Image 1 (cartoon, one colour):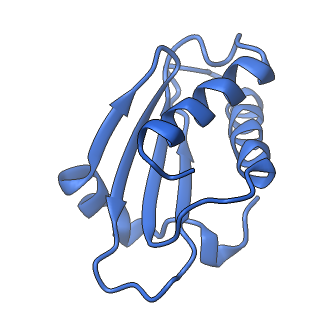
Image 2: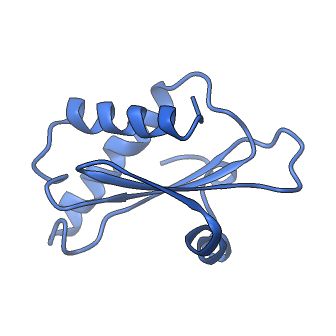
Image 3: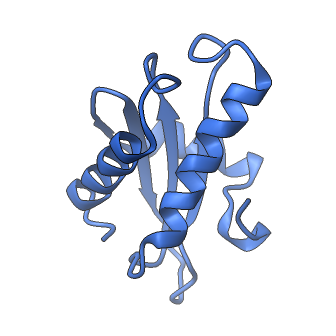
Amino acid sequence: MFPKNRRVARSEFAPILKKGRTLHSPLLSLRVLEKKQCEKEPSTFAFVVSKKVAAKATARNRIKRRGYATLREIQSISPCHSCVVFFKKGADTASFAALKKEILSLFKEAQLV
């Protein structure tokens, strides 16, 4: 789990979903919103796995942990962004390397890395 200052708050979800830029890949969708009043605060992240993707909570938590582990490995993430990553069907059977590759490619496309 990420520290609290690096996680997206519940109150931030609605603006991110409404105004955020959307990027897609076969296993993921990424919503990114740049924070307006920001003084080099770290970017915040959230990972969302619905019950349609993985029925059991243990499987959903495993997918989220893989996402957070990928974030820990990334050294240079640009500040002042709020990001929500939605996992699609098939993410539960995908390998960690495949998920990591797609997360990195979406972050590069969004110019976060």
